[in-house]
Image (cartoon, rainbow, N blue to C red):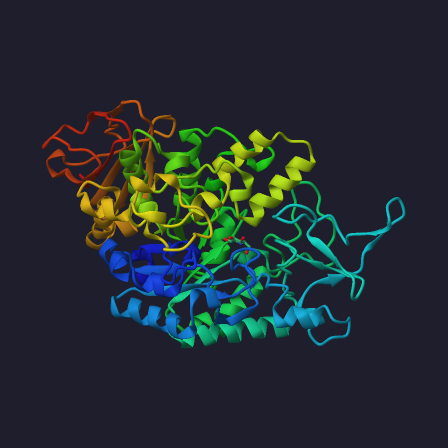
Length: 562
Ligand code: NOJ
């Protein structure tokens, strides 16, 4: 496996709107981030992934971009952004930007032109179609049956030219037409412009949706006309050739519905496309038959099966990205751990998993202090377009209010978007004004200031895991092997690099669990076992062949293979 800086790095994701507000308008901003760079350096992360900071009408909090080369006023100026980049580089950290080019905002100059007339030079920058005959309905209907990720049809009728445009996300996020060479050229030029400003790479939003099936036919049940479309790899290779290959940067593609085989196509070491992708299989583990909002129980054996599949199938072929939450997902502690009595130990146990799998770990802001999901009383307190559209649709279809709220409590994106909790003062120290989204009421207990004051906090555990990554190549490059696949309480695995081996043992639940090491699977010299990290005090020289793990106990041993 080839050594690369981005394999050895730990990424920290910032959702700027919710990170730190410097001017009291209730919205996080670039100066706010700059004021926290020493905090990030102290944590030890290497790369910052900045969610969109571009001009945007904010229909989807910046994922609807109206100008790719300017900074949204409420976050600051281009000068602030340059100061941020310099501040990161001065501290030895890198910056990757969010690249959102499956769609733009409908307020982007290209779309403003495009919708004017059928022969406008920008018409083909987007995907326009006339309606289909519908003799049984109003005479005309959407061009096909594709649905939007944000509820309803993926087509919007536009009066001006009496045609529909495609929007896989909101009506204010029209899809760009990647079949049009000019669009691709614009995107590559824009990427080059940012790279020449000195950024260190891109996180690419829903990048596996850019190629649509020609003719845009109706999708059959279980099929999609736009996921991993026929030209997607051609486009990615072109982007790499034209832009990425000219810089030493890192790239991660957000790719929904991909299998490990797909990931190898996008991120295979010899493919000339991306460095890694975000997969969603694990994030789907608690979805019911109706999808994300139908919350279903999950089993540890299934969790291990998914993670192991990705670890094993990508081994030696492509690189994993490891994340357990982000700005679109509920908080990991509330979802996979215990955000009540076992808050601290379960947060550390999940952190152990995040940092000891093969792949680049991604920390989402607030995760390092154990921030949790939120439960707002009223739907009016929620701001996320996906949540609000779903609420409306489900209500229209007769669903019960409290059942919908329970889905939102479990899965809503605003769980991750409540402001960062800096201290126990008003608004958790995030703003002196009124926060755009209410602060989680648990900020009095869970906040950065108290984490920094407590040597045993989740924060210092993350810091230690990051330091360990820098010292032990086996943590980065070791090959993963699962132990005891069927065990429903313990997740244990080894990582091996030459003679060096890690043994990771995690109790995923609040009940104590017996762990008996299978010596046929793990063969090592007992005298060499060194405890690298644990979320409990562990007696010296304890026999690791048979252990009783305490609630959410995590241990990582370093061994020498026999
Ligand atoms: C994925 C982003 O992570 C999400 O926040 C956004 O809503 C969609 N892509 C559309 O850009």
